[in-house]
Length: 255
Image 1: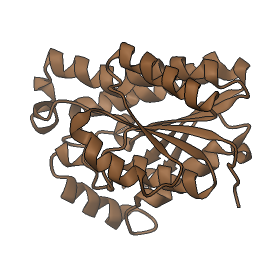
Image 2: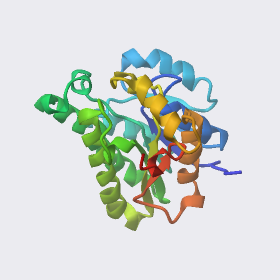
Image 3: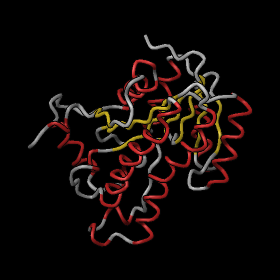
């Protein structure tokens, strides 16, 4: 059994019980990690706080990752409360709904900017804030999707953001490796999260995935959480800059 007792994990992106961040938080908590759970704004606070209460010892923090001042403020608070950070989970992505439902060629300049800022730059920003607190090394995790590599209809500008995110993982792994900080991504299969509902024809995507994946089913949040637990632990001490697929094998199929 993986033991994370004495480790502090900061999890960004908890929205509700369908969030992948919730599956990851549960697995880290079960392994003994102390959790700092970050939600975006006041609107999401009530549901997030309700879930946080299910994880004894966890504390909630409000932080909009598109605002550098809020990132600085939340990590100042985390430093004061915990002293150090061992694990950072970035489960944040957003693009304007209109840019996910139309023809890709009609992607707006503003939609492109927002998708890249919230979904990609935020990983760099929170990693930069967390790194000085990772005094004993650490593990940084983010979430990507197969659309970073292959065309997934309706994923549109978010696919470009995921491609950039995977590149950012590699560059951050190189940048932070000399501090013994590892940076990896999990590429999960489609899951009915709040964010995924903004993608057109999600139901069709999930059916096709279950039909073609070698395991003939879809993945769930706790399975993604299990992979995150491994990457957060010392069992993955020599793994960095990688994309781990947790998609029931879908990515290996040609057709």
